[in-house]
Amino acid sequence: MKSLSNMLAFVRVAEVQSFVQASNVLGLSTSAVSKAVARLEADLGVKLFHRTTRSISLTTDGVRFYEGCQQLLGELNALEAEIQGNRVAPRGRLTVSVPTAFGRICLVPVLKAFTQAFPEIALDISMDDRPVDLAEQGIDIAIRTGQLSDSANLIIRQLLTYPLMVCGSPTYFEQYEQPQHPEQLQQHTCLNFRNRSTGRFYPWSFTVEGKAERYAVSGSVVFDNADAIVRSAIAGLGLSQMPAFLAAEAISTGNLVEVLNPYRPPEVPVWICYLDRRFVAPRIRAFVDFMATQKEAFTTTCKPT
Image (cartoon, rainbow, N blue to C red; front, side, top):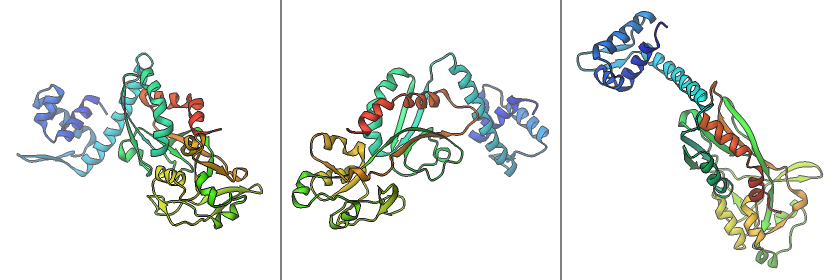
């Protein structure tokens, strides 16, 4: 391509669907913008716009070329930001998706330190347990727990791991004996957690005689909210297998008691993910690198003693 300026003119016209408005944005005359697009069409040998006296619209080739230009300009902007990032502080809006309970208990306590270290980064955090498509939804970073269903086109970094714990309240154990083996869960009321995306229950996992085992448990109450399960376990409605960071405070105050500790399953990994791009924006790199330094803080909230 002979001139980047011709491509930029084309992109602005495609965005606003008007040569006049594009010329105002670019600070050029309408004639100059029109000639730039015409030169681009001549270079490519295709028609990029359908033109009438009242409107313009992209041709099929125009749509494809516009999509490619957006990707190229995005990489160019990221490269510029990366180079500038070597001498200026990371800045801009950063969108982050994080599971609800993990975000509330583990992420929020470290955000003040991050905002103090990077005051020019504006955080936009969505707490949601559903899977997200970073590219489609325009999300910069996702934090996810457990096995990732799809890691294609992603850079993935493990932040930490946390244990799963089976807990019940002292009042519950006044009525029922504590189970000594996962098989005995069939004799107890268990609180199941339903995955909102699939509608299925999460199986309870254990390590029995060195092997990973899963158990289907039953009870009269099902939730799709982790905090509700914790509160219900504290209220004595039944036993629950939950992330340690959910149980930590209640265990420390004596409102929950862990059972089946010798059968804990392998710890659950927590991942931080972002799109695999040639150039990574400084604000993304800053957040990922900062979170990687917070292992001690995360351990305090995610692994109760």
